Length: 141
Image (cartoon, rainbow, N blue to C red; front, top):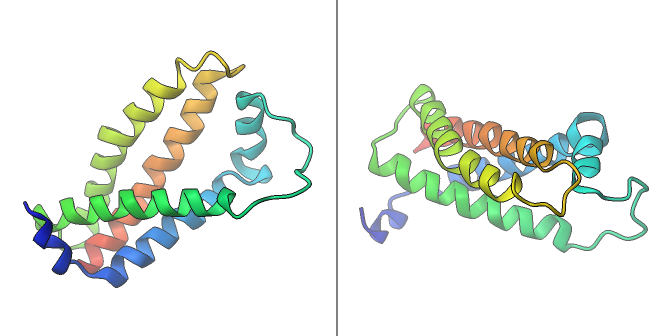
């Protein structure tokens, strides 16, 4: 594989998959889903913040774009060309890369009151998000 694959990608698929992955995070980390448990596991104050900066959304959006782009490149190189192969691609990247990385960095973070819970919620988000992104990419690549 080379970087010339960037010219062959369906960029609309990459953008839509990125937005879907990011939007899942808005739901996943909401108070009614895993947000309160994640905040408790992180040791954060559960009162609503007074001011939320653009970085709270910009950084996750950029990271979702980067991992979706990498997944699209792997999908293109592996000739993923349908939704089921895309789901498998997302699961492989999510379970094989994102989950272990999230667990090894999160589970040993002794600054957190519940590091395993913190890591599990974050890893779960990435596995589900990458599976969703993979399904979109598989259908459109």
